[in-house]
Each structure stands twice: as C-alpha cells, then as structure tokens.
Length: 268
Ligand SMILES: [Fe+2]
Ligand SMILES: [Fe+2]
Image (cartoon, rainbow, N blue to C red):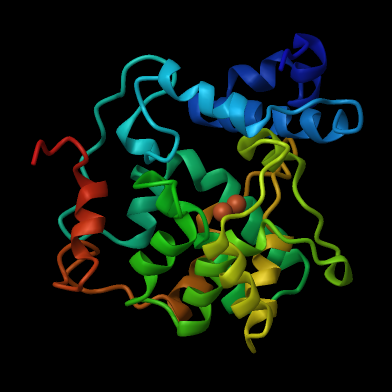
C-alpha cells in the first residue's frame, strides 16, 4: 500500500513532532496508519488470495511466524541491550517487547477506558507480547509463557483471543478484522483446530473474558496518546506474580522461553 507523506505527517502532529519520535515509535505509527488506511479503503480494496500469499513464501529468507526478535524485515538485526540479572515483566517491556509494546499498551489503555475488569486489562496488556518469541499460534504460546504468573482466567483470555479474532460477535460489536483479509487472504477459513477451539470457547464460562480482549484489540494509534507501562503498575502488582529469581531463572517449565528472549543471539 502506498502512503501519502503529507497526510501521514499531519496525522502524527507535523514534521517537528515526528522528528522527536524514536525509530520504534515511528515504526508503530506507520503500522497503525497503514492499518487505518486499510480499514478506510476496505470497501473498494482487493485483498490477496491464500494462493497469492503462499506464492510469496519462497520470496523471503524468513517465515512469517518467526518472532520479532529473531528477524529484521528492514536491514540487519541490532545488538540488544543487556537485561538485568533478575528481569521483571517491566524489563521485558522496556528491553525486549519493543515491536508490540505500543499496541498492547494501547489495547490495555482502551480496556481501562472502557471500564474492563483488572484481569481483562492485564490480558490486553500481555496478549501479543509473545510475538517477540514467535508469532505462529501466538495465543497458545502467549498463554503458556504467562501461565505460571497470572490467574487461569487471564491465561484463558490470552490463549483464546487468537481464535476469537476470526469469529464475529455482533452482540458485542466485534467484526472480522479487515487486516486479517490482508494477512491471511480474502478466501481464508480458519483451520479445523481453530474451529473446534471456537466451539469450545463459545460455550465456556469465560468466553467474555477472551472476547473482551478481541474487542479492545485495536490499532488505535492516536497522536500524543502514548500510554506508559507505569499506568498499569498497580494492576501488574496485584495480578502478576513476579518470580524473585527473575523471569527465566525461576526453574518454571517456561523459564527457557523467557531466556530465549533474553538472549536470542545464543547459537544453541
Ligand atoms: Fe493477537
Ligand atoms: Fe493484538
């Protein structure tokens, strides 16, 4: 998709405002802008087919499901800042979750504005962060890395938001995302395992918790609105069991996943 420079700069608050943004903020802004454009032009827009997307596979040196930390889609990867010896969730947000931080902070901010429960706000805050490690089936991976540290309900909402993104819920105002036509192909139908999972979640007592993550899961970049993690410190304090040894070093069954994000340059 082509973007026109002037409307884009104006949307971000002008050239001076853009000059003050760091490269992550610029990348986030561009991504949000593109998604917005995509939504606006949805009516007249044609989307790739699954076959067209499949034909692109051999045009890239990486696979689309790979985690953000392991590949750069524009030039070489960068050296990562060192993490403290006992890393906290906040350290991961600051030092490793750069690619998704703005999106999940915006989602949690929206959930808070919409008066959601603290558990739903936390689920929104965490829902896509595992994409630093892996993107394919990110709902399941995401729930897994957080399971030892959050309530069952929060893990449920994280796991199943992935599935619910594919299914409309007019009663709660959730529509199939236009972005998904672009990402998965206009003729995409969720695979049988996703379909079966949808039936399970639809009839579960916590359906709404997972559904509310999808409802607040929007790219809603507003210039000048940059929610910070500190806004959610109390919620994290009450609902996230930070291990004293640090994430990655507490001997939990998922510790190695955190360590892989701490040092993705480890050759083995
Ligand atoms: Fe997601
Ligand atoms: Fe999301």
